[in-house]
Length: 374
Image 1 (tube, rainbow, N blue to C red):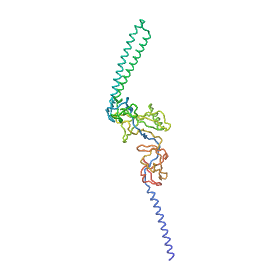
Image 2 (cartoon, rainbow, N blue to C red; image 1 turned 90 degrees about the vertical axis):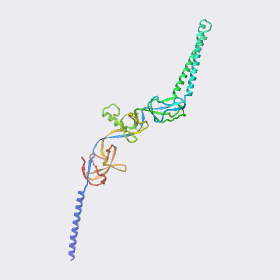
Image 3 (tube, rainbow, N blue to C red; image 1 turned 135 degrees about the vertical axis):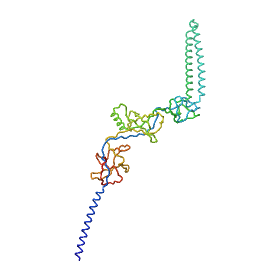
Image 4 (cartoon, rainbow, N blue to C red; image 1 turned 60 degrees about the horizontal axis):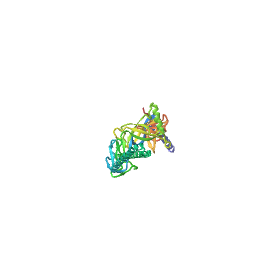
């Protein structure tokens, strides 16, 4: 009876081991058969077009400060802030009462000096025959002639004062020297304005092209100059630039680049450039902020689709596949981008396989069935 029980126990144990071995084998086959397919691509170096952006504030090609040229109280104001004006249009009027009085006084002085000159000339004419007849000495004639010369000089001085008085009267009417748009008006009727005032009455931004000054690092300047050489062009930086306005829209007209300064700033290692944008519709105004956009070619970089990346603690990550089809996350160093691609110069090797879809379903160390994208 006891022997029979041992035999049954042995058979049951052997059967159990067989079942376990079979189950493990099936489980291993099931796990291998269940590897999920993912589309992959090989990392290859190439070149792509991106853009560099530089903040700027626009300025007119001619920004004129309107300042008084004589001292006085403003009696009239003919314009409003931001108004469009034409060359020669009246802007302000300074009270001219004292200036008209100065003209009258100067004119009276001129008349008096003319009379003095006439008298001096008569004295000369009277003494000439007396000297010729020996009645008076030549010295008296010379004295009369000197008096005539002095009277003439005084008359010239009086005429100059009259001329200055008329000019000053003209300065009481302040007109626009250019056609453009007014800035903020800083003085109003009744204000005493002086030549020495630090603040101008207003400014006039001339109509026409608008300038955008910005700084660019020396490396980017060299890149643009190489592009110039490749295109066999004589002008500096043969590229068109764009302007993004404050609301995010692109300005309809392209701009051109030129030097704002011919020297590299030794402190910042940057160079001042100037972009000139046409403004035929007077759409742009001085003081507008914007972003100057310069196209840039990235060479010998990996072009990695943005869609196959994800962010982790300010790092840009991708999933790379090993030779045994195991995937691992990898940080990449992005040096530029456009709407579709990141441009990467570090973190990858030529020919390395990257997972291109379903990255949100992957985990470190997972095996996949790769399907190479065409």
